[in-house]
Length: 218
Image 1: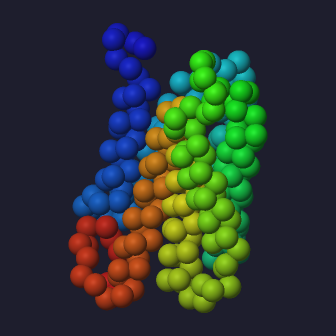
Image 2: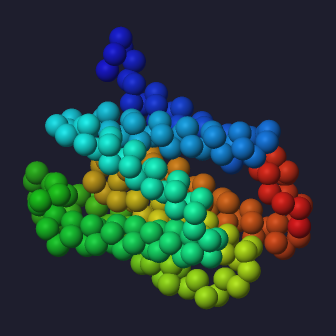
């Protein structure tokens, strides 16, 4: 909190706006890519700032190293290998969210999911855990089906769908744990992936779509 302004909430709002501009904004494609990158960086910075951690320099260094490694892989690997790598990472994300939700259900007291009075789980715990488990399992299944994507268009749709489902599982886990950073970040990623998959499918079917998203003509 600084000068009465919640910096974390402001960063989340600005990152959401940047993600929306990257999806539906007008202008060249590279500008929308830069908007998405700026939104991701701002969202990560807000998530780190909102948590009171001791080893903040180490976390920032690992994030920078991971980003540099991802940039090197993206530029150096062939498209088919990069597609399988990203698809596998999305599938692992879904499995991680699924395991986290199951662990919370098996030991709800450790995760603060029990009410102060009465028996059973908190009202939102079971539905959020169910959504996390289902979306995580579907994400893992989608990541295991790269052979069905025979051309570039199908690979792009499958990757967008798998990434969107992974984001949905992250958002559901964020609601389960009442963690705003996970909920916002996962919601943005899930929405972006699912919207992109739907638009790619519509373009493939030959439907007339707005051209502001920079999608190729059918």
